[in-house]
Image (cartoon, rainbow, N blue to C red; front, side, top):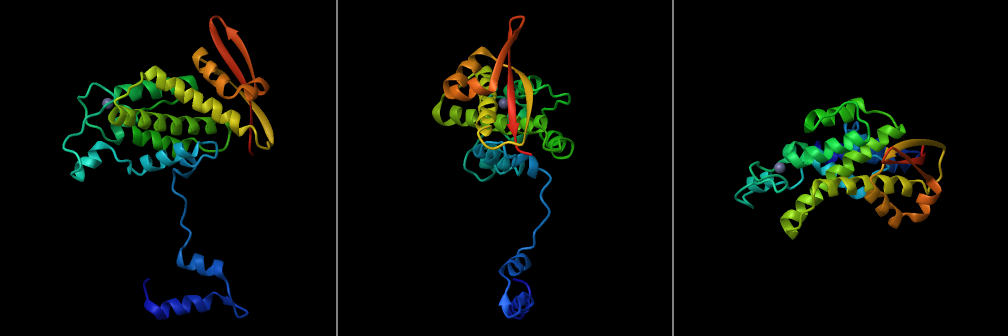
Length: 242
Ligand SMILES: [Zn+2]
């Protein structure tokens, strides 16, 4: 600590009121509370699965152990993306979402959620999330969920290909991400709520089948289904915290 023992004594003395040490004052004196980072709301969206938030937290700080970082540390000798045709090096920007596979996945999710502004380049995308997608409205929250779920599922797919030699198609990934979003919303609805809103989402029949298997009771009480032409839609009554 700067200032040595005398400075520390002075700090402690300044936190004594009526002969009693104010621990909170001392703590904030030693660890000043800094302003939240711009991506705080995006990463720590309350509806996110914790594992999704954790991976996204690493990604925004570029701390995920992508192959370019492993090469820098001398752990591996070459960096090849396992998601596309193998002609590109793996780094954060490529994985999220410039790789042809992740571009397809993220574009599909953005289209599904009716994003008006679309981007597959990491820095402007995070700027948009940090400075343009503000507030606690339903659509903003689902869009934050979508980013965290997509990043998590792409990272998981990358790990499966490297460590288990197993691969899924981009369409399979998209189904999993939609499933994560739908089931995450339904699970959150179990808590107390302040008001209700709804959102119409196009639902793939296979995704619906997976949701039914995992959340049958919730599905019955919270969702209604209707068709337009040959497409199936799901109206989900979202209960969320104010
Ligand atoms: Zn790639």
